[in-house]
Image (tube, rainbow, N blue to C red):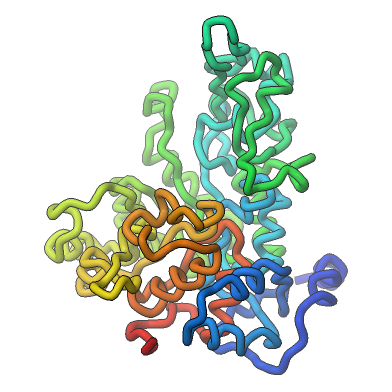
Length: 427
């Protein structure tokens, strides 16, 4: 690294370093990131801690309040830090790194000219950017903006895909908080719709990035990579000659071209064929490929035999929605599900998604907490969920929409890069 880059990084991080809580502890096994030797947690982890019901876990976490917090690979920035920053923007990624996420996610889609960009879906530009307010680009959308018709009750419509525009056109867009106003009669009104528990305070000028630019930024920030190959909504092969395998290979080749070590990359997909392609055709990166899973639990897709079949295909990491790995025992405590126990017995590592995505937890936590709803009634239960995933399930990492919380837990519990391991602290 050049002296100029060292100086640039040091200057950029002065505010974060200046606001880090003082303390003496050095957590075990946390990631020695270049860009943030100490992290900026802000008030949220402490708010959640104060909101917890009294318990041994609360006392353990309270004892860490004055510690010196550092980045951890256990803390994964889900689309950056989208609880408050527009997802998959430069600003969201930097916020995640400042909060100590050791790994940050870029969801990968492709443009009309087959360039890779960071977007959660190929067809979400109308809800995550300002595209409908730019006439010449709105006109290129699969479904250009159509205003709502209050008389008939017809909602506003739009569908804009990354494959509708070129990379150069994509880079002219500005990121916004995901959402839209179905009652909009103008493109400007359509941009509204942010959930009331999020904020537009930091959504005035989100900077969109290509996949390659995200890699460069993450290298500068000193964080690792977990790109997710998004399933195209266009017919593949795209334009007859760009296959799914071409797309999967291109994503990995961007890391090879950037000189990223394979051990710093966790490629993800919800589709088994993508994961097996990396395992078999690009094995240096396939060793850490993550098979994502949000399917309803059935006897066929949760049994030990099923988990062993994945392991036999050299899949090493499973990424289930957090509700699949958790259940309630006879005492109402959150514990590992049979699904999770079988995955662990088959030798699979697990990564959980996503904490702090459901908004306030007073009403049971919604979809992400559906198997443990009866144990969720306050925001502080976020730490109970993280603790169960770490101690009872034994996950090696957790995605969060606000990584500071998971960073706090990881530091307090002395997690190493492989997670906490098994065995639950007595309550």
